[in-house]
Each structure stands twice: as C-alpha cells, then as structure tokens.
Image 1 (cartoon, one colour):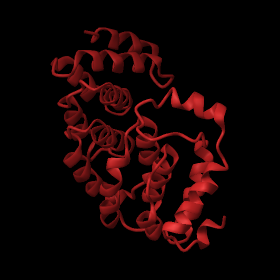
Image 2 (spheres, one colour):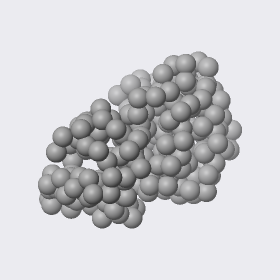
Image 3 (cartoon, rainbow, N blue to C red):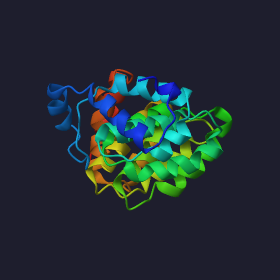
Amino acid sequence: MELSDVKWNGKTYAEFREYLSSFADKKYRDFHYGLCKTSSYPMMGVRLPIMQKIASEIVKGKPLLFLTASSVQSYEEAMIRGLVTAKLKMPLAEKLVYIEEFLPYIDNWAVCDSFCTALKPKKNELYILFEFCREHVFSQNTYETRTAVVLMMRYLLTDEFGEDVISIWENIDCTEYYVSMAVAWAFSESFIKFREKTLEVFSSGNTDVVTQNRAIQKIRDSYRVSDSDKDLVLGFKR
C-alpha cells in the first residue's frame, strides 16, 4: 500500500486497517499486551518501528485527510494516529488543535510516551509547549497528565523552563500509578540537569512519598549519576 499516495476516506481507511493487520505478530502481541494492559483497544501485535515507518509515509501524503478518515479500533491505530499527529509538518501553534483531538485516544503509557518522543518541537516553540502542558498537567485524566509530564521532561528541562516545571511536578496528584511513574522518571532526569532544585523539592516534604522514593531509586539506577550522589539521595528517602 503506497501510503503517501492514498486518497483517504472511509473505504481507504478500512483497506489501511487490513494492511496494518498484515504486520501482526501474535507472540509479540501477547508479550506487549502484558505491558500495556490499560489499553481499551484490542492489540494486533505490530512492532513500533513498523508503525513509525508507516506514520512517516502517511505524513508524506495527506495526513490531515488521514486523521479525518481515522476511526480508531485498535491499539496500533491509536499509536499511528498519535505518531502522525506528532509528525505533522506545521508550526506547533497550528498543530495543537490536532493534539487536542488526539489526547482522548491515549490510554496507556506506550502511546503516550511514543507520541511525546515523536513531537520534537522547535526551540522557538517551547513557550507554546510550556503553556499547553500547564493547561493539561493537572487534568483528572491519568494519561493527559502523564502526557504533559513527559513532554515537560523531554523538552522543557531548559534554563528558561526547568525550575518552573520541577515546581509543577512537586504539586501533581500522584495517586494514579502511571502518573506517579512519570513524575518519578521526570525527577530522575531533573536531578541530572537541575540537581539543587530537585534536592530542594525532595527536602520540602510536599511530594508524594511513594513517587519521591521511586524517583530516588531511578536516580540510583542511573549510569549518569555519580556514586557519591547515589549515596546522597538515599538521605531523602521517606
């Protein structure tokens, strides 16, 4: 199927779904489903590199028509919709409307994190991204919050935004497991780039106990952290 040449509509999207299923791997599906049990969609078992290549080919053609025709019925379709949205060749300010449309399809960590990795905003778009994340990070939806946290971690640990995003993470409700894990991951990254600010947050007592302890373990597991700092953070375990 020449994805860059498709005229997207209901019929061609149904054909695309059949094409996508041709890459299914049952053993991989069974393995990967065990890692993404929160997904509400059935899983075919298509590997991520294949879906990334498919999304890139779609973006070369008429991706907005693809998004209009899309009727997600599987984990893989949600993933590809997210990758296409992230890869749209337009300014982030224009892309936000399509990101907002995509957010409800995120119901597992893999789709969330793959979308965030693929987005790749330009340096002069980071303020737009910061405002977008601030609007969504305190959502009642687990994966909306996780998406904002992961985007902040990946792109906003900069001189301009770093301390602000760390302060935001300090105040997130981490009751939900996949939010807690994202915030812990984010703190483990901020420790490397903003060591003193991160230790200040750990000292405050404001963060969720479980999340802080998870962050400390991730810091201790990191090859980018010195042995002395690994010993140091143990003193902040609660």
